[in-house]
Amino acid sequence: MKEVDNMANPISIDTEMITLGQFLKLADVIQSGGMAKWFLSEHEVTVNNEPDNRRGRKLYVGDVVAIEGFGSFQVVN
Image (cartoon, rainbow, N blue to C red):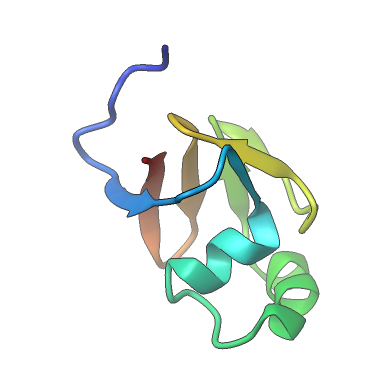
């Protein structure tokens, strides 16, 4: 089990996983799923401290997403 990051904003999911594109919309970082590809090409995003710009990247409970200019978020259930 991954450690909880107390500095990250929790984003709750009801499924086993969520894609990075879906996550951006759920976290209110983007307004529509169609913006994900553009957003990821224009902003620095890391998943668990590793750069990632794939909108289809699968995120699971415990993963931490950091977005330049928006902060850090942690996937929780």
